Image (cartoon, rainbow, N blue to C red):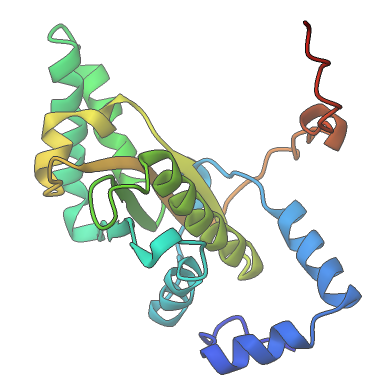
Length: 220
């Protein structure tokens, strides 16, 4: 039995993979389908402790990464910096809407204070081999994030990804020190679930999978 609160060593991971079988496949399927988005406003304390946070972040390292570029990173936003992030959200709103009301600005600020654990996901489109395009780098980041979401689910926490126009704002880019080739992809929130909505109906395999047919005959 795996201890999800203790990071795997490479040797342990290899041994676990070699021992995998139908039982593991069922555990994986159950975990994958148990994951659901819980809005940040429904994520309360306690969040992951220091050891659990390291395990969550460690799960990201197992993501596929062509050329081992490590084209993504995570920035933790501690409670002590939520106020400054709130002002970034307000400034981002002002950047795109100079007529924003005080109430709208307060609503933007409030988003910074949700969920006990908040991280920004950043993708670097320029580091390493230039032949690895941005789409592939974002795909690698998505896999890293999904690993973390699944680990959070296994630990009993709720989680969510959030985006929005503030991610592209000058205020946010400056606050997080993003260089010209970096992109703020999304925020990741983790915490204890206060309330869950009913699970959404998932698409069937037939909704998103097809089989490539024979090539059309060439015309003279």
